[in-house]
Length: 48
Length: 469
Image (cartoon, rainbow over all chains, first blue to last red):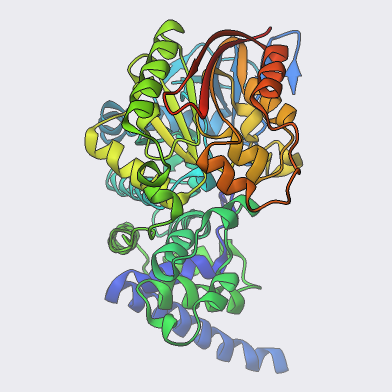
């Protein structure tokens, strides 16, 4: 993947979704939901 | 950083993006592009928004010239008459620069482009018109990605504007001290309690800071992928830019009145004095033969800068009070005057070199070679008000000029009411050298005095002098 020369800041990228109105907030919510789901999916495999 | 064999001097302020670099050759401003940047440039040059903004003068004039090895392509840029830094701008200037950056980004997004960064240093001025200079910043927009320059935009443009608009805190010292601007966490401390709710603060300051902390371990490439999968789109990126634009337009509180705002009325000139002084200045600048750059030190409301602009191609008007500079900027914009650049700077504490090695952003003295220097009602403020030895004041005035330049300087006699007011704040006998004869002797050591005129009040003398080579 091509990265920009500037460190855009992970938090700075996500906050842009939130300030982009209702549609943006939905994207941010989806991102957090996916992170949450991924964490629960990962846990059982970690224990084996 | 000069290469003597090729005559190329690499610009010390252009290294952060390795894909392109600004350099100087034979008085020209050139930009070398690597292979990827050259591809981006060709796509950009063929795009509608770029041509439109270029024609409107909102982008710095740019054309491709024969490539200079080792670069794949080379661009030649228009020369900006005087390079200034964001901490030398007034609130209205920083705001207009921010709005231009956002306007350009919005137009770019429509045509499938974005900017790699969002720094206040992407902008410069032609008089009172902001210009976007970082042509190397444009690249094709990649689907699903937020603006990489948002953080930089907040730190160098939005946060300084919030500080001034919401709290009345002058932003200039913050930007001068930190080349990368204010961090979200610093800003959060300013905006506690009820201030958390001020426009733009809950999201761009508090949420931004909190998100940075919570995502400190996540890499930007992971977060970009996650946002893309969650459905982030170009339309969303455009909506975000529009939202920031709307916020910046709301931030229009003018800086308050200050001591210097009313200086022209309270400084004790008679109409006769003023008339004689205006004539003296006008004749001096006219006799300098269409000078390329005149520098007005202690410009106040710009009366003499405007007179200089009748004859000089460009005038830089320096004044220490941000509120006064802001009023001057707005007045010049309203008049449609485009050849006077007002700047905020204290002459006793001029802009130092900043950034990497102290040369990434050149100090004021390193940037300034004026053909005419006006120092009207300035010397006594430096010599008495700030205790600068008179010889040093003369050295500094001459040092800002090219050899052969015209210096127009006013010496306020110790008996003058304004000088007496300043002297009354200092112990008796502190400045035995502050005398007209001594000033004249010092001036004659650095310059050839060609004219001398005492103002009708009899307590001020004007000099026209040619700076020695």
